[in-house]
Length: 187
Image 1 (cartoon, rainbow, N blue to C red):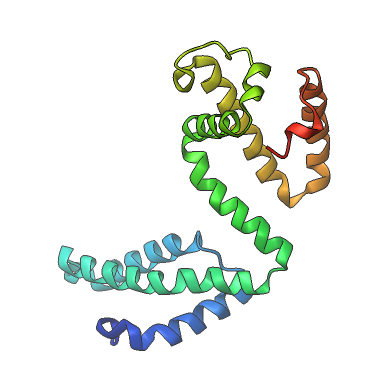
Image 2 (cartoon, rainbow, N blue to C red):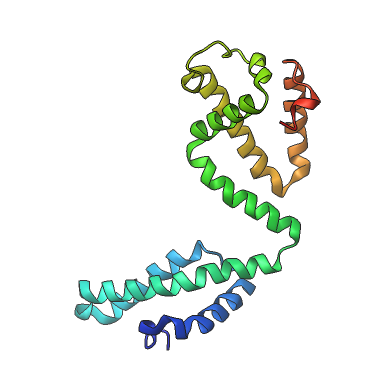
């Protein structure tokens, strides 16, 4: 039915969404789609033998990609619908952090430059305070990257807050040695 209606994917969307919801009940996750796609193509190749041509492979790959394009977001939504508000928040934080994590240095430098824009006196707390231009400072880049890695560790620990607490306490203690005060945190 899916293959027959692939040119009118809009008509198949409700069926594919329902299929995704059912698969969510069996704990299917997005990472399974490439495996199933690979198995499907291999099975078809074996079944078709010499009839498996590059054009046939391209056609089946296109069909599979259209199916995944509908089912994968529906599967994600099905999981989100089952989650508590806290889990939804955690998931959104984790997903969005994935984008930031691609370039920790750039985002870390932007983070600190924004801090210094909001609270210029905060710059005086750092060893790289006199390096110019500041945005190109090796010290700032190194510190910014380390801070972003720590944020990444915190994001990864959101599933188990209790195991994250010692890391956060250690971080707070380390910052008290540098005259960082509680009133600095709202910045």
